[in-house]
Image (cartoon, rainbow, N blue to C red; front, top):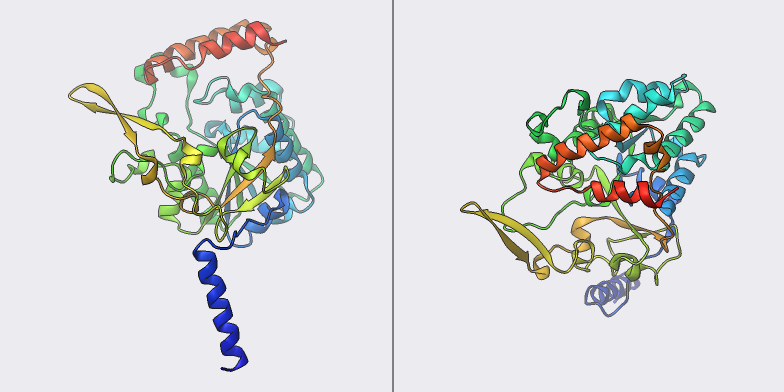
Length: 359
């Protein structure tokens, strides 16, 4: 047997050994910022799962967008926390034009998600991108793309006025990415909640998800295979964070494909007991999914960004509501409408907690 044949035989044996699980193919962690920028060499879109209002998450995001290499690699930042109706205001602000704070606040205050984006972290992220642009020539400046549906709160008076499609927001984000990024051969970092970046979601049965209800990761994988690189963020004591903390230090990215992570069940993301409710003869019937039926991590995400221990959530400043009774009244009006839309009040308790317990 010649040298080349013996070499090929050795490689084959090693490959089979790894496939059989006899070798621990531990993921090689990389600096998170470096790895994310490298992903743009092969993917025009990077979906970065955001842990909402996490101090660690936003420290990482601000450092990422402010890094000298970022504007050379990325053209656009797609931000979940912004209403597409106010894209012109957002464009002027990010370009460095004079925009009043009251006008700028419309961008995130008027979204389908109440309270969440009032955390100062989102304004700080926009401020960071605006500051980066000030040092760049116009042709190299970053653009921030709003991606929440164009809800028009002043003209919504009841639950019947709430467009049904706004209950599933991912279609809007997918449309923005297709129109403003892919169709124009640009590259975009998409900052959106972790559940939206996954290429597959648990299903009660084998029926495909209706297109208007697909997550961004699902829709892009179906319509534009290979276009998006999906990154799940792990922080604190989540099951995923507990798994990867022995493999990496904070702010490191761990690849999934070709490593010991790829065969992990995605139940580590969704939870061990996943229950859906199916309407049967007018009654809601709980249906629990067997975790063994869930896809592997390789089918759902491409990498895990580990941010380390969770220190705190940055909630909105209570004075934001106390000093503006009109806005507080409007928030309570919106809560009343959305409670009817979704069949449950998910905001009043949090608002009261902010008003009562935070300076």
